[in-house]
Length: 114
Length: 115
Image 1 (spheres, rainbow over the protein chains, first blue to last red):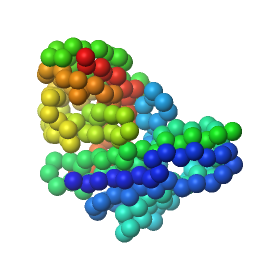
Image 2: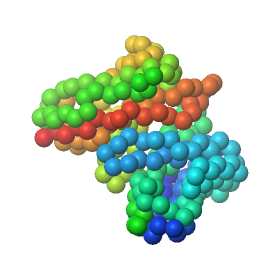
Image 3: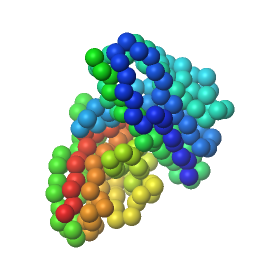
Image 4: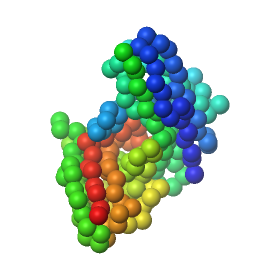
């Protein structure tokens, strides 16, 4: 079974600072997804990374994927309070039977303090 | 498009009761799935479907049944509710290409409490 580990699980940072969230996974996969969840809300798709070396950026967030290291990072640049949320990474498996399955990390709860 | 819709938003059940969580999507997506989210944990896959009439088990299928008679609907049935099924349930859909699905679109969730 594929395992997905995120760290840190909790992150409190000041506005204007930079930080990185890490997502490690245990078996071979070439696709990784990042989602954002606000309290009491559903999940919103942020990035879809579909190959080794993929890098995507949206505003103050940048995600990258290293399939050889089985690692994805979500980098936050000059954080603002609006980025406060829980961030999840998810990995899907290569299909062996009917279809590929998605496995989620436990999430990183980010609190950006003014 | 409404996207992925779920009903009800909140539900309280007594142990042993049964109920059905509804999920519908209007994006003509072939792939649909159900997840549960417990505090401090990510989402765990309960069941999924790759098309009408085709379903399969995820990580935590025990105590739940699904069926998919149409592309649009994917209900989740709790056969005999237990306190361990207290959770937030999310339905998701995505399009597929070959054997793989792509990014998933999530519904708003159903918060279920079993007493």
